Image 1 (cartoon, rainbow, N blue to C red):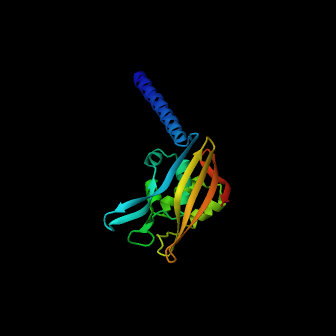
Image 2: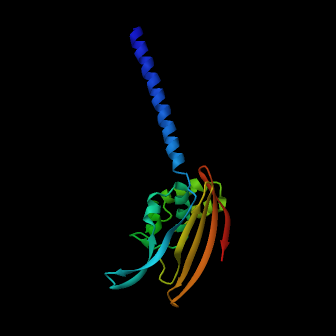
Length: 203
């Protein structure tokens, strides 16, 4: 009987140690996902590529595959927010609400304005009411055949507590066959598992 109690106590102690270790390890992994390096990276740009079906060159968005493969959650939330408000080769698949976008797909954020998409973004911008409201009221929008606001070049600079985004964008007027360039600089503060927009300058 005494032997059985000792074994039972040992099992309880072992399970407790395993639980604590697993919890700490999971927390460390979660925190590691949020660690930002001091670096500047060009993450998005445009290139002319040959389209076999059209048999001519077309201008498309290109992604820094290495950056997207190793992106942290705060950077993912920032780019996800921007890619939900600026065109990035978005096309509807079947239903109008099922809009897939190049950048959102690369971020594994699903369809534009989907519940999964909005849940992730709002979890990061929960203390920034203006952005949280934008995310909540997001409406799926496929590429327009008349006017399109899109990315040209995106550069991201990070340090331990800040994500700075420099966007060189394009407004495409297909009807008038005109292209207008614009630039915007945004700075986001990272505080543990929260993001907030601290500065926004349009040029």
